[in-house]
Amino acid sequence: MTCPMRLSRMIILFSALLLSLFISTSLLAQNYQDTEEIVFVIKPTDFKKKAKSDIAKKHNAILKEAVTQYWESNITYKFLEERPAYKYAKTKKGKIIVAELETIIEVGTVRVETNFNFRTHNTSKILSVRLPSMGLEKKDIIYALMHSQFMYKNLTRFKKPSKELPKAYGHLLKEKTLLIAASDLSKGFTETDLKNSYPYEFKVVSDEELR
Image (tube, rainbow, N blue to C red; front, side, top):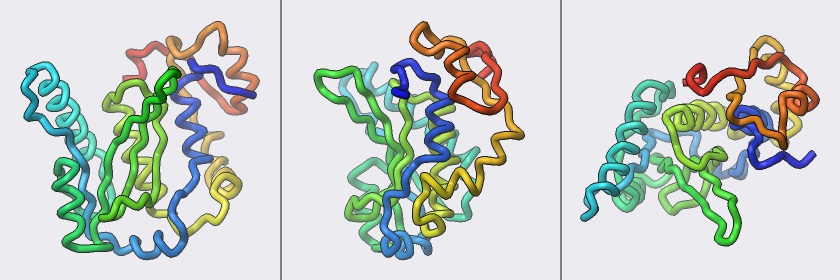
């Protein structure tokens, strides 16, 4: 079934959790199992327009807060802007990874896609978490952090993630209640449609309850 555009973010995140493909090759993944440090890319703030600068500062503040609270890996981290981040990563090739949020907008369509990518010093992609969000709220970044850590720990474990992940972790969903924002449902995808496509327990709640 083709997912409608307003399909709940939580459903998409659920799908990503089970079906995200590990982009790295086994060799590349093995080379980065001994990573010493993660550099999270922050936005530049030295814009002439105050409004633009304020947006960047707000984003950076949210990112730093989320990382401080939810980065559970024993790999240390720091925050740098994009160019300094890759320059710094080159000082210890293979020991430092750059993590950055990248938004892709397709001209002429309404498709907007944000990915949280882990890259090597020469920008080769190790793994990627897809976030189907128009904008990035703290909860989106938290999801990206938690899921990327899960993926990184399992880089070399699964040869066919889309088939093996559901078998390894799918049973956990039976014990959880999926919360869905009422505002994410529409005439094109109703609560009934959700019942027909999601086999486990869920609850439709307000946006405030999800925050």
